[in-house]
Length: 122
Length: 234
Length: 281
Figure 1 (spheres, chains in turn red, cyan, yellow):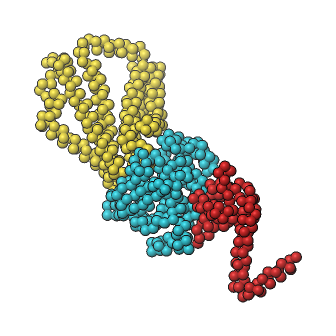
Figure 2: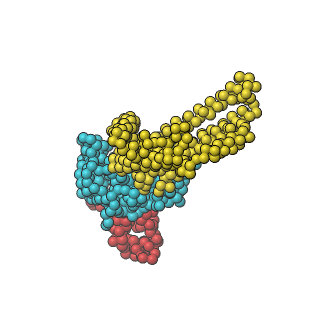
Figure 3: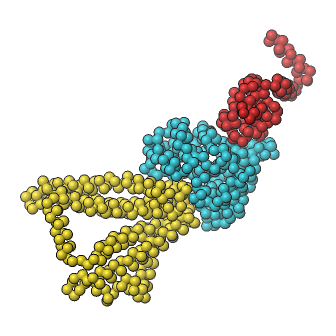
């Protein structure tokens, strides 16, 4: 999975969001060592200071824990991970509803549509 | 954060032409800074003054507390906007020369970059293509752990694929407590890498701001802001 | 730093002139051999053989010496002009070395080039003669020392000789620095820098001539060199006098001092321009 950086917003924000997504999806499993700033910066093709700032954001959200001896690790706190997952899911839901609204669906209709689609598949 | 570069009321004229006009600039350590401006805006002149290749007409420059001279040349790694190789040398001769003169030159890093760039040490420099020479120059400059890297147009005149490769080479090899000053007019290609942007127009600094702050303030990219500000000249 | 700079300057010099030096020495040995075994100089050989194996190679050797001198002059100018004030200057002037060290490195390399080229020429001559007629050469050598002893030279003579060598070296260095100063002055111009350098060289010559003229007419030179009617180096019947040699020694001492002063002036002028008015294209 590559980083996808847009021009309109600060890069560190986009990086911290995309790294958060990687953590929630298990690309970096709970309790595992988190890659170094330098490696991540090289992977994203950004400046280490920018990546540092993105990691700072992840730390303040509690997704990444800095330990003096071990370095950075991914949190094992299920509560934190679930909260983040919920937040991402909520963002996705809002995005869905807003785009459905553009197509002329009311919120209820959109919800019904999503549920119907699921039944059709199963 | 400690100040690495300071320019105070710096001016330089060439006859009637004012290449730099009252430039005040302060750069801390550990940053990647874009020196951005259209051709002829004074980027190269400023870099040459920082290097000690030119003397200012007025004002003063301090690099790590010293005026440009032997002491500052020890800590500056400079990539000029042209080839500067003695014709008779081989790639390995240039590596020897750099490691002879610069205490911070890392031979292991040079060897590693030569491998990555596909450079053979035994090759005579005059047999290399222009693009290969530029890569070799970059290899030499980035093999130093300098306090200040002055890179004058490192990606001008190469295709977009090579640009990304060059930026990556810079990014993965510069010493992190050092500051990198990259002059260019190709902002889109360097934007992701920059901490700060300095806009130069007709020898004057018209903007010096962090890239994050530009994006938050304008909701757009540095490139976009640059295009808006310099539309008349582009 | 000077040592490191010279390492590279000497290498580029050796690359260019090493083959020439070897060629000159080899050719002189070959000519010596052909004179000894093939060409009978006294007239036994036919004209064509003499020409092909004797005259022609000698002409080539002579041409090689001339070429060596011309190339050395070009090298001295070109290494300074291109090496410090051309594109290569971007490399040299960002090395942690002072302007003085750069000039000294180029200048000492030039001096070494001049000395070695001179020695190679001398060696070629000696080799040619030795190979041609070893016995004759040895005899000549002995004869030379015998004549020298007969002259009963005064004890100051070796000093005069040493002074002569020093004067030669010092003036060679001053000449080189004069070229550098002229090129540096030419660098101050915006365009046609090579042309301006040439004009500066001529100009410096004129200024020095005027200064010398002023020195002579004011009697300064005479006092400095002990020149003029009191010279008295030779007696009426053409023998070297002790007092004359002493004078010559004194005069050369003054000349050495003058050359050093002139050379130093060129050095500092060049250094000033490189430090304060460097403006690479």
